[in-house]
Figure (tube, rainbow, N blue to C red):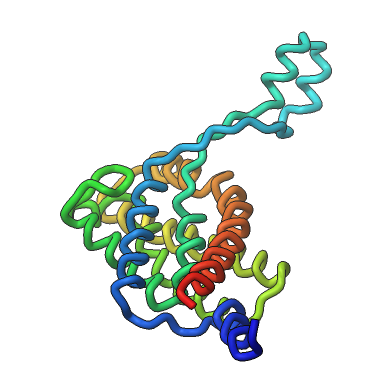
Length: 225
């Protein structure tokens, strides 16, 4: 490997060398839009241990073994949409990442590619704010990924980016609820389902997604060279 090639590779990997607009990059952007659509309708089910609020009182009742296992085991159905956004950030960078999200939103105005359908009326759905929040998250995270990042910085980037998406999503949800004069019980249930334990999973899987995206970006650069 020559010094010139090594310098180009490091620049692309760590400093966010700009990707030129070519047929290949546009096809890659279209692929990321398709990947985001697939992630929207993908559910990953997994079980893990957790400690409910009634842990102490439950154990004092001397339950059977199978009751203990079921009581302290939670099965969660996870939709990997937000980690896919961070994969797109790491793979395409800020400019093409935003282009992919805009393409996804525009397509959703005509086709039912969002979680609950599509069309212009989807603007008034409670969850649409999370989709809109992908744009500032990509701008913020894509800007930070232009510089050299270590593990701790990627973790911090993921935490801040995921929190930004959920906070903006909740604010949009409250705005729509105000327009619809929805009850607080309904709004609370929506917030719990969209931004409850989901936030923790989003943070964890987004870190993995960034590393996979950066590796894929490096691999593509080697192929293109």
